[in-house]
Image: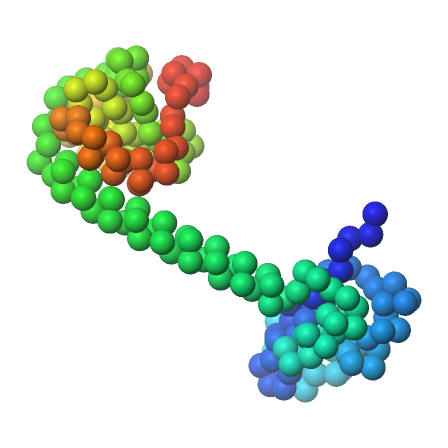
Length: 216
């Protein structure tokens, strides 16, 4: 099955052409015939200084100004403009989500500032937990390297556990045992729906459900 044809950014010429767009696949003879009068078949010698080109300076390409003309000639529906609008929308969603997470983290840090740090074992906390949140899988992916964080929700409290067992860390402040070693710092705060909601926003509801033994 032939891949859907579309224009993609192929190279950048800072001296003359600016951004140049080529195709995501090789053109058929019929397709090439439709664009040969509105595009240029570039080669390194076409440019004033090929050493300043970033990207691939070979093949059929057009400037920004001719994008719509080329797409119309070839009947391309997955247009550059359409994809740019989709990317812009995704960026707006990302920026909004990031802002929400930043605000949630700021408030969470205020709640846990000065919170008690009673001694506890991680495996016990995980056994009694009702929900365990692992932001961006930080604990799952970094536990064995001494990093990662967990939010452990129990009936009456929410623990904020920060792995603190990397080489060079001050492990004397650790109050959470992992595998019988003081390996993490754990802050304990009373359970509130508000704090739980903040953690859900920060972690995007990313749960850490498996027992710690299953990760080993």
